[in-house]
Each structure stands twice: as structure tokens, then as C-alpha cells.
Image (cartoon, rainbow, N blue to C red; front, side):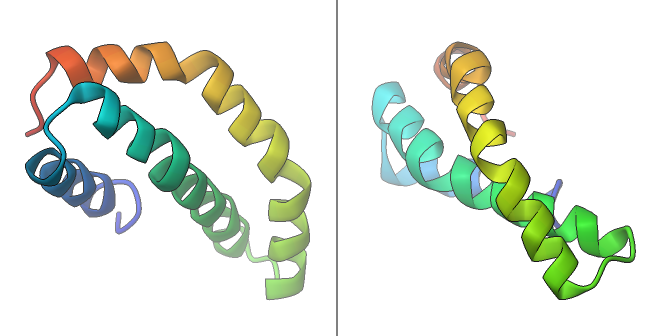
Length: 89
């Protein structure tokens, strides 16, 4: 609940106040927010599965690069459309 709801909500709420141009928002989202959020999500999912810190960290390191590369490859265009045409709530 803490990761998937409030964090994205407040990120998009405040980033649109700071940066007005959709491409600027996309760059910040893709280069700063997405990598941090994906890494945190991978780590926390492993912890919620009952893995130790070391196991969760190892799992995060193993999955992070393929995840972020595919995130960039498949979601960047959709994210731009979302930022450009759908107002934050």
C-alpha cells in the first residue's frame, strides 16, 4: 500500500507543478523516478516474500537491469501518452 499508492500519487502531483513540459516530466520520470521505484519495488517484494536482506538484495541485483531495460523499451511511449494526455489525479 505504501509503495504503489501514495508514492506515485505524490510524485506525479508535485512533478507537474515543478516541470510543465511533458518531455521534461517524462525525462525526470524515466531517468530518476522509474529506476528508484523499480529497485525499491523489487527489494520490498522479496522482503514481503520472507527473504532476508541479503537474499532480497541479491534478487534485486539479479533482476534489476533486465527489468529497467524492458521498462524503458516497452513503457516509455505509453508513459509519454499518459503524461501528455491524462491529467494527474
